[in-house]
Image (tube, rainbow, N blue to C red; front, side, top):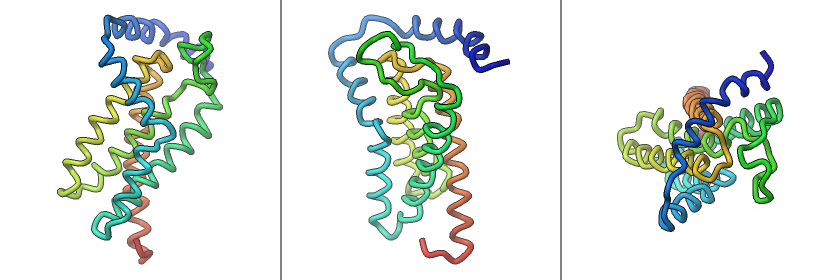
Length: 183
């Protein structure tokens, strides 16, 4: 089955979820979700967080792990899957709509890659931060649906891929550490 066939089969699910999410929103929710989407642009919030973690010796390894997860996210989502599937966005006919492909959601992938990388380090002192990151990552993923720039399957796939990137980033960091690389 081609990617067009797969997306066609998922179309009813995507449409139903987007219709269910459409509703009366107020100025505050509009503002907050637009800002949540904005801070997820380019993974900037996660890059800043990784830099902050790298600045302290006791969290440097966790910061490196977040950077690796973000790098995996970029390779997998933006450089591989988006060009491969080239899915149009739900807002495709609007002049304000982003022009890059929709599937999978880069915002969702990078957000969950960063949060899960921190979670999978299993460092007790970082668990509260990881939980906050998951809350922000979830808000960012939801904001992409709210703004009508992604389909639900774009975001769900991005969330899954983010967990995969975070998981493998932890393992790569462990391999680098075990080979006596200074982290």
